[in-house]
Image 1 (cartoon, rainbow, N blue to C red):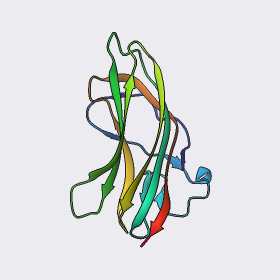
Image 2 (tube, rainbow, N blue to C red):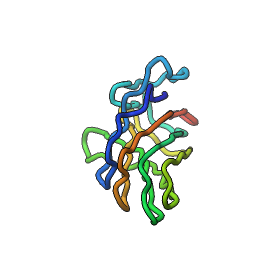
Image 3 (cartoon, rainbow, N blue to C red):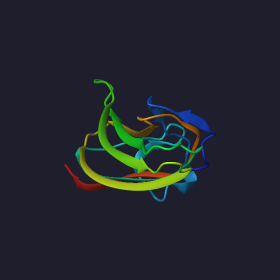
Length: 144
């Protein structure tokens, strides 16, 4: 599924922000249950999945330091606290104003667990941060 339009500019900090606002019309044929307004995909059964994230981001210059952008895939089984199942830690060059990234990870998925992505800036704040062209998908590899 693809994010329908860029989010309004925010200040991205070490507190993760949930990425949402995906467009059901840009789902690209995804057949798993998902809620476009929250960005949550619910796996239909236990099995092995490929998870893919692609994104672009714009922001104000980050100064004379190399910083990181952290994109995490979280799982929520409504029993435990949400937990991470995958991450993409992007090193961002000093004085840059944009970046992009792509990640594919194979993991064991559980039935009826909600999966979603969050973004954070663990080193220092990114101001006027806008995500663009975000896509997030699960592809079943081996269903049990």
